[in-house]
Image 1 (cartoon, rainbow, N blue to C red):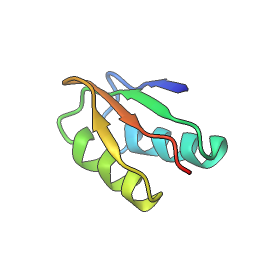
Image 2 (image 1 turned 30 degrees about the vertical axis):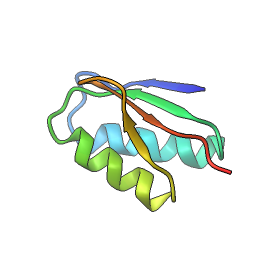
Image 3 (image 1 turned 90 degrees about the vertical axis):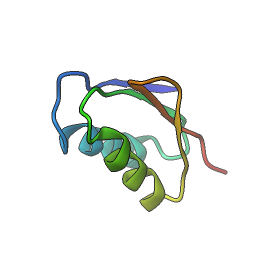
Image 4 (image 1 turned 60 degrees about the vertical axis):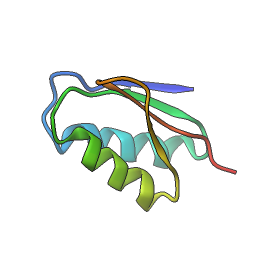
Length: 68
């Protein structure tokens, strides 16, 4: 599992970091910590664009499940 700590970063940076991880690590599951109020919406859009689902683990922790 790839883990990203994007706390303290304002959008679009958490979404950019997630998109990069998905591109570089292919089918791996990615966990991301993000505290920007816009993060859930933007991270969900990045996950959907990659054909994957965003799961909310807690208020600040999100997970993009592994594909295939």
